[in-house]
Length: 403
Image (cartoon, rainbow, N blue to C red; front, side, top):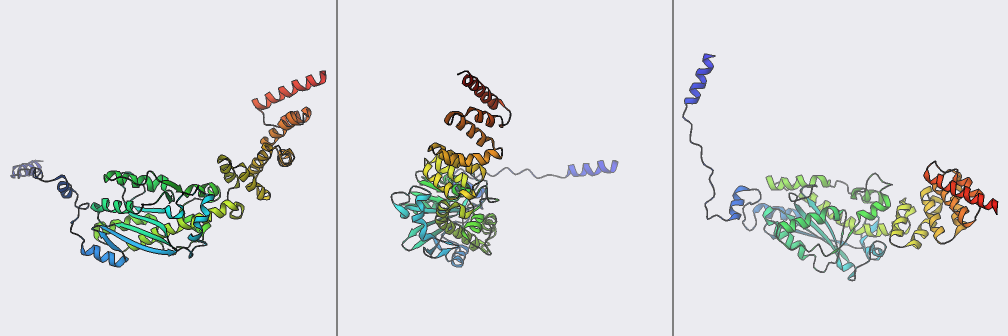
């Protein structure tokens, strides 16, 4: 114990240097300079363009449009197939999905981003912004790549300029992710956001209507495999894009940036051909094993009862019980009782409570066959509704006997 005390005494007696005060930047330093010193990753040397940027631009076939921003342009002929479909057929397909803006296809922009994470919010960067627009006989694909964090305002300004003349954005899950993220980045950069006044068609929603109950998921990769017939081969998974970009920021390793840009380009192409694909699904959903009931109900919500009826009639042999009930209800609204009865009766024989109740109402109010109505009501599941109907029918039968 005495040995331990002696060692502690010696350590305490060693002269300690005075703690150095925190060196605040001189009062003359600007806020930007203070931030640069605090965050060297974000504020890398601001020389016009570094040799590394020049090398990666040459490797990617891109142009340095501003220090820290690369632009890659590619053209895809509209008549060239991407999977089973062609972008050339997109304009004629739009009315089935969305009221076409007055400018037509020239005013559309397919947009997709690659981001530093999936959480969104102020800490997530859109380091690749991709836009596809119709240009003559081609789909012109433009991709801006952020190679320095301090160049983000320039990238966003260039992206905004490319939206001149656009009145409809087309995305995949853009309403929930891409657009809110881009709006946040514009706000943080102190720039006017050109996205807010534009109409927006998020193709995830028609895909979900048609296939959410049919497929394990509705990710774009599933759409490509199950509907578009697109095989990407050695494509870089989107989840690996953030790591590829961080490799460049931290170590100057651009090895996977080309794969990130290719992935983004294929996403844009898939958006363009998804329009004609979904139009075909709308036209003949049974051929694509789509959810007929959900599609019919969507048409009803839009006020297109005739379209819902046509859809269900065309696929009548394939209809599930819930879809047959919906078709019967549409016939009832048209006073086409014979067709409605032909659908309700087999379902009622199987004990379907909706069909039993519909038939009971028919025989009580239309056919006025109270005994048959009561027999049907007694097959309904026990509960207050059955009890009320039974009591009412029994009263009516007593009155009928008294007359």
